[in-house]
Image (cartoon, rainbow, N blue to C red; front, side, top):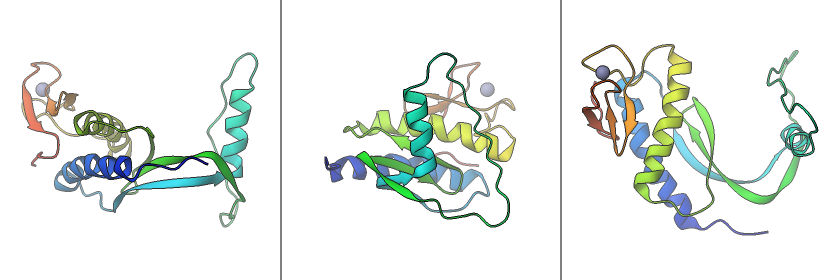
Length: 160
Ligand SMILES: [Zn+2]
């Protein structure tokens, strides 16, 4: 089994902390953000993954899960290689690249993905463009207005 370079994990955590700071300062969402290495997954995810890989024809499947009664602990199976996940403050779990990232690229990637999840969670624009009511957009290392293309704040330095 290949090992995950601790430097990669450290960099991803640094990226995540910047985006987490923006979320903490501008929303009521609380919860720790941590980057973790996983070397197993639950058996259902493994089945879905295998099913997708070997699918013939239309490869769509439902993500709806209905649970009756108390959630059951599902059996876990080892992954072929370890994965790096961001567990983002109870909002999302995001699979990250196992390769070394530049901080700027990592911040951009996490900001864009987390923005999507925060909007889904809060049902409101986030982060809000101060000049308008629409959500800001990730542009370079900044949040920017999607209309005027003017910068709002550097990612990690967003204020209410
Ligand atoms: Zn705007």
